[in-house]
Amino acid sequence: MFDDFIVRAFAAGIGLAFITGPLGCFIVWRRLSYFGDTIAHSALLGVVIAYALDFNLIIAVFVVSCLLALSLLFLQRRTNLPDDALLGLLAHSVLAIGLVLLGILSFIRIDLMGLLFGDILSVNVTDLLFVWIGGSIVLIVLILIWRPLFAGTVNLELAKAEGLNPDLANAIFTLLIASVIAISIKIVGILLITGLLIIPASASRNLSSTPIQMAIISSIIGLASVVLGIQTSMIWNTPTGPTILTITLGVFIISLLPLKKLLISKKKIELLNKR
Amino acid sequence: MNSLVELNNCGVIRNHKWLVRGVSLKVSQGEIVTLIGPNGSGKSTTAKMSLDILKPDEGTNNIKKGMRISYVPQKISIDWSLPLRAIDFVNLVKKHKTSEIDDALSITGIKHLIYEDVRNLSGGEFQRLLMARAIAKEPHFLVLDEPVQGVDYPGEIALYKTIQEIVKKINCGILLISHNLHVVMSQTDYVICLNGHVCCSGAPNTVIKEPEYIKLFGKNIDPTLAFYQHHHDHEHLPDGSIDDSKKD
Image: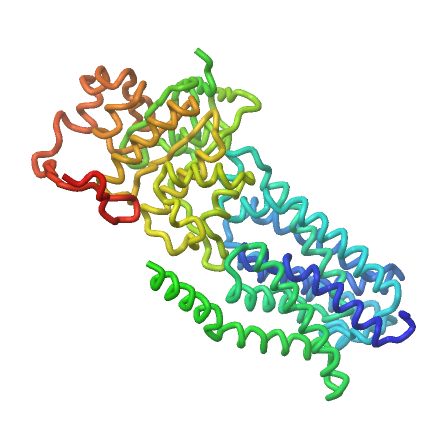
């Protein structure tokens, strides 16, 4: 069944969309979109290391991402610089190091375009295993830490005072972001992954009134965009990752239409009539 | 008495400056302890030490193990990106039964707002929601940091009455922070007057006579202020409508 590259592409994209939905919501709620971007930038270094040592690409990227997250924590404690400056510093310096290393190790040939924008049609069975097994683990862990993570997102001190451990949940959440970015490199590429995390979540925000609703709708939007995106890219012969992202943008624009308001105002009018 | 929280000579230092120093206090079951003091006097810092959010740099904080704690922080701002209804907020730290949520929202008078998005609530309504969430847990120890800010005057009195009722009903210990001295004083068991250190402390009637207290807050209310006596012939329900059953 997974012999066909199209089937593999669909399976990989759908698996990814399941996790990016809820994870993306937390990234939006916690204002971490630039953090996601920074981790994605560091992925190039991971890829170069993977090629140089002939190591699994996804694991190498995951390890580099985790190291980056740790350095961010370290810098936050040692300096008085604002977070966005630290993130910019890390993102671009690590990207530069990756490119320098790539220049030194001239025997490595990397498909840079594929790395930047993904190449979902080249996904193999090992990648699929990473997406589905890794993705399931990420999803289960996210469900397990949901309460402390969410309570800490609303108010850190309140969560701490009432006996939850939001700091631990935050640290685990950082690892989850790193793993999802590692998993998604082949599928949408390092330049577009933050988009796949944020745009469906943002569109979902306009349509939902509870946090869990927002997470689920976000997954559904991601799922639909992946399926539509792969098909469209085959019909029009466009690059797949960017096509998927363009479709999520389309959904976001639709979500801006006052669909929910129309529903609510109807309900309110009914209520008033009853009184 | 069963002591829930004890601070012994506690202090917190940040950037070479003591935010608060030498604070000792004890909250027992069924007791209201009130912290008063001007802005920046270390009231919130003291509250955070009693919750173990802040570790004291000096002294010790003993907090009874295994008790349920509820905290109403001074400021909470909910990010626009978070869709959150009142009921979701009540369930934030612990999922409650529907009946428990109904009870908590009824006591604080906002039951009709249960499915309302928290950003649509007014300042006073949000303050009541914070309180509802805190009491839904039936805590052993409840910390209220300026719980009546943004609440109108009748609402303020109602909320203070609610706090008294809660103590009676669930018999918890309360640490209450306030800068409104005159309203709080009447119902509290023990008052601690802070200004970077403990200025004076004791039962409400004794504190008010202390010279340190008078120096900080004045002997009487400022002559430019006065109480306006309301003579209402009706009472309002929490949603603003008039209670017909109590109309003269």
